[in-house]
Amino acid sequence: MAKDHGNQIKNDEQYEKLRDKGMSKEKAARIANDSNSGEKGGKAKKYEDRTKDDLYEEAKKVGIEGRSEMSKDELVKALRNN
Image 1 (cartoon, rainbow, N blue to C red):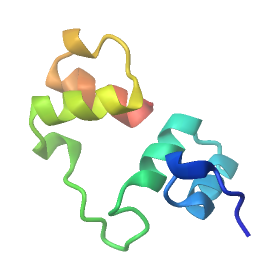
Image 2: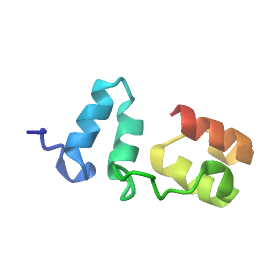
Image 3: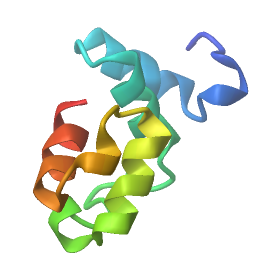
């Protein structure tokens, strides 16, 4: 049974599996808290299909620094590598 990580993590089991694979806490939490994660054929839009404003908000949620100065391509790269 997965450890309860409190209300910050919606899917504790998925979070722990992602952390075991070596993902950062932030990235594992972002994936585990996404309502579309864990479903085959994920429903989330590709980063390239999102607006710069959407990417900025996502970067803000995960705490990417310097996001206000980034281009859309830089935001995509930062989100993928976070």
